[in-house]
Length: 121
Picture 1 (tube, rainbow, N blue to C red):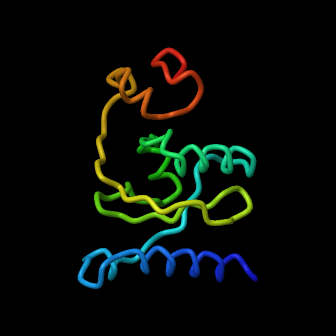
Picture 2: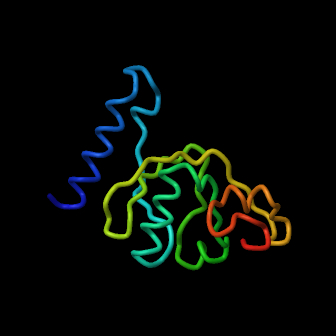
């Protein structure tokens, strides 16, 4: 079975868990992965799936450079591992733009990686 078929089956399985009148049944999704190597994408994706990593960050200029839009509140993402296998479905619930030095300890903890401290982040 190819990756796109697996992803679509994963999405359909998710939709089957929703009640008939639930608005998110009509939503679309984007396929995404965290990190830039297959190994890291799998590791970080599993942290998201397991509820350890509940926040993330991006550089605004980095997104602009590659022509990618900022995430939008309500955006649904189907997260895949480093081999493109579906792991979980998430919804963007908040988007903040702030300078690096305004990141706090709670954000670093919710980031879910390393020792989860601000110094480690």
